[in-house]
Each structure stands twice: as C-alpha cells, then as structure tokens.
Length: 93
View 1 (tube, rainbow, N blue to C red):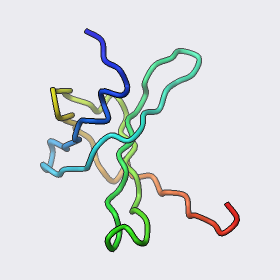
View 2: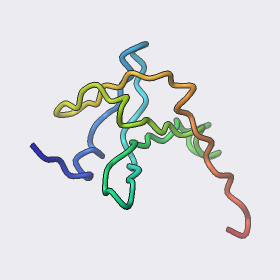
View 3: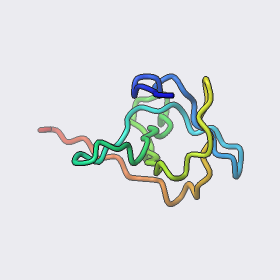
View 4: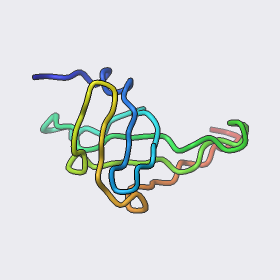
C-alpha cells in the first residue's frame, strides 16, 4: 500500500507515551540520494494568537512512528529530543 506526502498533511500527530496532541504534519524530511522519508515535521503551537510566531517545531524520526491511521499518526518518542528551534525572522530576510 502506498501513500502520498500530501496524504500526511491531513493527519494529526499524537504521542502515545503521554497522550499529547502535537498538531498536524506540515512537512517531511527526505534523504535525497535514496528518496526515503526520514522524518515528519510538526510545527510548534502559536504564541499569543499567532502574533509572535510559533514555538519550536517537532522533527520526528520515521523510526518513531508506531502507526499511521486514516486520520491520525501515533508516535512514540521523547518529545524533548525531537524539538528543533525555528529560525528567527529577520528584518532583511
């Protein structure tokens, strides 16, 4: 059974170790020579109604994915290890 990357955007990510809802997949990381998906990216929650950006993103390795369902992805990982700081926006881009 195959799946398209766009199919992952509609799925919510939940950590099974503590039941926390991380959000929805926004991107994937792909190993270019092999063409293999190595991680999914879930953006951090918005700060103060989205006016001050997001907190750190979650980059969850593919090996941590336990199950991909019709509308949810279950992961088992230590969330502190998966947090990646978002780049700070600059005035000149």
